[in-house]
Image (cartoon, rainbow, N blue to C red; front, side, top):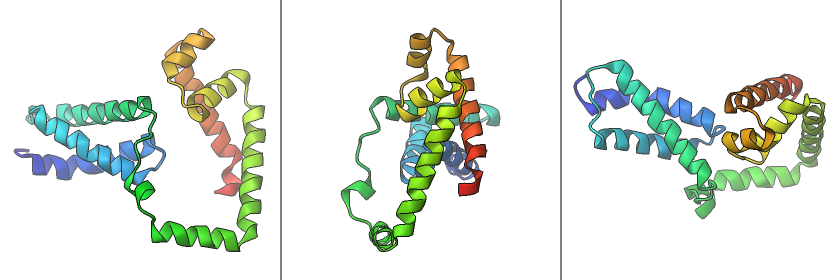
Length: 170
């Protein structure tokens, strides 16, 4: 690996996939942060001799960018928020024309609320605070007198249990 175009070609799918998972599939934001990740790596003149170090550096940089985005409140408008998108407009038109979609969305929302209420207390508190309220895990840990690791485990287990409960809606 001798140049950045090779590094970009090789690691872009890994970095982009990582960012999309962290950002719940928000492709446009993930693309932006992916570009920023590589720009920062190039600016930092990362040593490209050790491939594991390059990949680790890129993923760590990407993770830090996601954290920064969350801390800023994730309120920077995206291009799709600034300019109307014909595809989104057509989806809105379809939704308005089909009341069944509203009914299905309501059923899904109600089922999710039921499943969240059924979670064990630790998992419910961690999920509601960390995912729904978007509080930093460190703040949740401090409020609950837990470790950050416990918060992460509870959120992971809650997500897993909720996904299993919602498998009929996928």
